[in-house]
Length: 320
Ligand code: UDP
Ligand code: MG
Image (cartoon, rainbow, N blue to C red; front, side):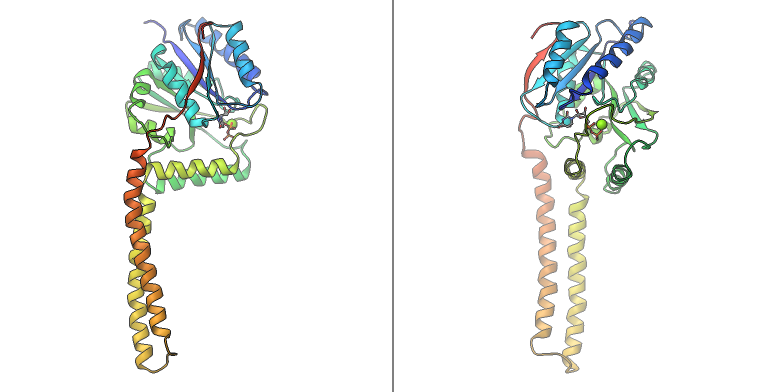
């Protein structure tokens, strides 16, 4: 059997501090894998520059010029976000590879896991999810928010792999099928399980970021979590509808109570009618919002046909 052609896809946003080290680690890894006949000599390491403001693209360019048979580079026209950068990389390399592995640039994902991912691929798996065995290196805050996020996602009925971020191997077939998912609200870890095919997980220890700062501040993380929930589940809208029903039910109880208080002659003038209408109107409004929201939620996912990223440059085999 011929060895497979593997492409690494690595999104980079202001990663000049780690890029040389990441390139060094992966160069060694690729040399070993090619040597042992696990991957073909056509395999490549692809860095996707996600509109960085620092020297990231200059570094990528240099790598592509110095070692065109190992590195390639994709420059997006602007900062499109982590998920869009990963997708842009996958879509660009799809036709050239048998499988691609997506990995962060900061070396938090252990490159030695790649060996096990390749082994799982040869065993017939089309998707291999990298799963963190622990979050020891994350701050307690990051750990709690991240684990809470996976729990909420599961409660909301989205099928995701627990503690799996975007470190995964995908076969060419799976990446081709990913083309059929036109959504703009990208949440790859929710989308890939929907594609199906035989899959497995490999666990690894997540390490500290090698250098530089996290490019995911709390605001971005919350946005990402909200995207993950609203793009994959209409359960929040159902909760609103149910809340509306509950409020209408409460309003009926309040109505009965107000009538009783009135008959007993204990009420102040105008109190009963005000109280009843507040509850009743509140209930009706929430109910209506829930119903309308349910429709908008469905339309929303369908109508946005904007491009998810724009590729400005692609450096491959020394060509532009
Ligand atoms: N990243 C990106 N675009 C962005 C933000 C992040 O391409 O807008 C990349 C970043 O360079 C890194 C990966 O996404 O390779 C994950 O980011 P980071 O390590 O900062 O996130 P964390 O691990 O702290 O959640
Ligand atoms: Mg990181």
